[in-house]
Length: 296
Image: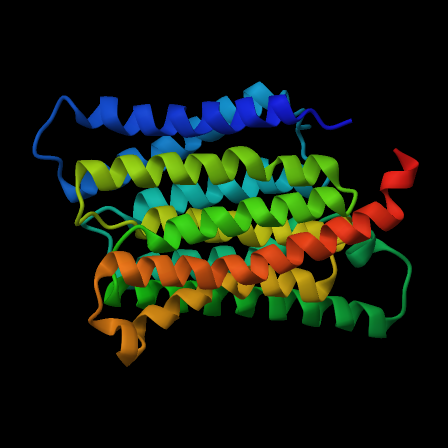
């Protein structure tokens, strides 16, 4: 049975560890440079994840034995490494985007490695269908990445990382209620580390570039929903809805809101994001009560 107290402890531990890592690491040098703060924020997310998963006592196998193992031991560390390199001043933006595109291209294939979707018995039509799904998933991730990056350039701030964290946690709860307890629990340290790092980074340098945090959050959200869809009972519609929900932040670029007070625009944007997330959680809870609760 899931332990809510353990989940809350893991959430608090991950968020506090990430926040303190940024604050303590940058406290010794003022003013904090953008490149140094970017490196610190990426490392803080990694540190928060280690602490959070340690509290959860989440057991992972090496070599990875399933999609969740491959997500946490390959995909997320790869995202951390790519964003560390991409944030260096001497790395051209074209090279940074090439690395991100390559990761988006291989992530679905890595997550499905050794699964029945790729190695199970089937016709050539099934293999082509699986290949088409992998390509579509990669293109979807690249498209979302580009759209959120454009939004971050037009409206810098903490809204995108926080929206990704909120969506990730909502997706985790939905996956848990769909029956994939371990996969849903894996989102708790990830969402908490994103929040702790984002808040601490913003406090240290309000005009800081949060693109690295955003990239890790998006890859993490995509990976969690991907394994929830293919290895859990998360429906395709639900997974896609959760994945594109952060794009609702584009409402802040509407002429009606563009020149309003930032706190008002942010409040309306997060309220708009909360609506589909709440609907999905309510529907997931109803489905859980109908199908899963009698078995507990």
